[in-house]
Image (cartoon, rainbow, N blue to C red; front, side, top):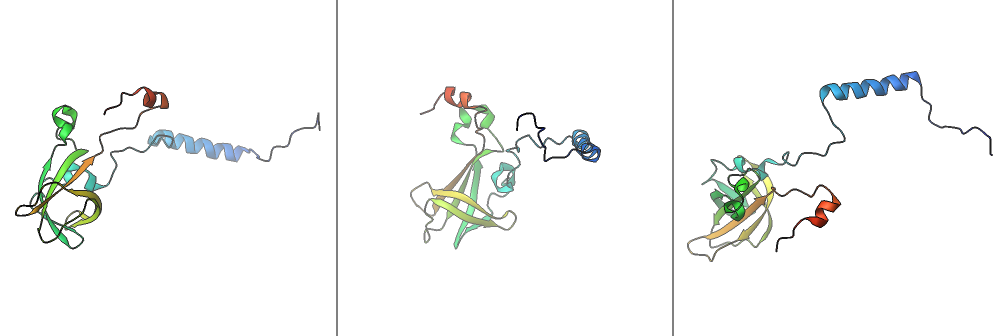
Length: 158
């Protein structure tokens, strides 16, 4: 046992080294970084504010309930944090629906002729008058802490 040469089950040949080297060179030239995390901005189109620009007044369906998009607005924190004002990733959608049908707060499958079918968390927000009002808050502006230490030292908001 001692003094015996170790056997290595992986054989390294000139061909395998050239193959790995060619792949690394191609990756460098193209600019790919397979070790980099995916970008958060590459998300579904229904989670981006510009998808709703020009769609105010359009009809959406949440199951059998018809909704009309009334507005696309800034999130409440936009007044205090200017980077949220007009943000593509933080906004509020306000819908109007009929008095005859009520949606409970929860995740609903919505559909629109132009946007297709997708899921959003929708909540009733006002006492019904001539229609029922609902909101969907989309806020993808928060980023995860970069490290465990940053998470432990980050101030907590209450």
